[in-house]
Length: 182
Image 1 (tube, rainbow, N blue to C red):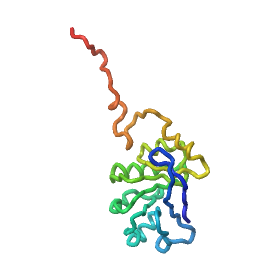
Image 2 (cartoon, rainbow, N blue to C red):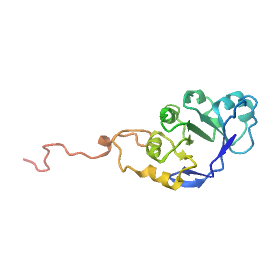
Image 3 (cartoon, rainbow, N blue to C red):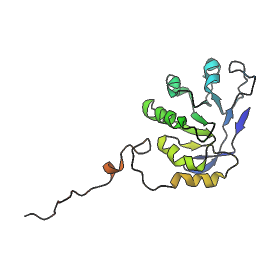
Image 4 (cartoon, helix red, strand yellow):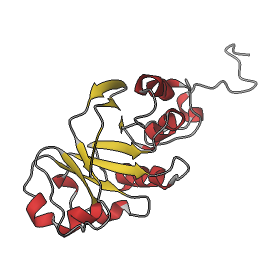
């Protein structure tokens, strides 16, 4: 089954999306599923089973399920135009750690997309962990979801989007210091 989102959030704006996400139907196997031509994001299992056939394609991406580790892609990162992380339920937060690991530990600089049950309330934190593209739930307004990226004007903690915590970014006055000499 191919999921297609006519629009995604990318670069903090709503844009057309011409990538399709391959999801295996019941009874399909990663070894034998037909991978359509064009821009396609395949499950990790399909990539692993059909690596030799897919590696030569210029427009292929891979998606990770919550229980799959980013490290499984470390030798293949150069092959992908996009990496997506699936959120089958908005309550499953394992994808945040996967995104962080892809960006910080593996050095992934390409598009990192959140797919699945992606809601407005998650976008700000997802961006902090390294996501830069979001395929939101199709039953919700993507334009409303876009507002989720700007709900906070400042953050305290360091993360992928800003490696310095607030106390390192904001100038501070030393208590008891005076500009006048005695």
